[in-house]
Length: 157
Image (tube, helix red, strand yellow):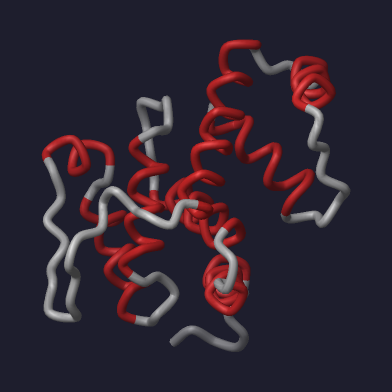
């Protein structure tokens, strides 16, 4: 399923190609690309739920949050998000790439992925997908792209 999400993001969203809205055409193209029907369905459902999260006026995971709040991860979240991933989320909050709303959207989408293994690189792509889909997060999306794609210049010593 994650491979399909990556395929869609790289070929349509990130490349700024024309985005196909017709589910049948998109499903056919993904089938021709070698993806299985059940995985295609799961990926498209994942994308629809992401769109629903950003369009919703109410966020079920948000209650009163202050700048003093600390995110406590559930046992299931800790099983999916290793220390490196959780540390990266904290880092993104500290540098204002994520706020508590987008962080929770990222965690929600990660937990919905149908994958056994999940790495920091996967986390970075999920963050990009979430930020791309949230209006008003263009600057954060750009910062995240810089964090992922920017090559350091000069000697590293």
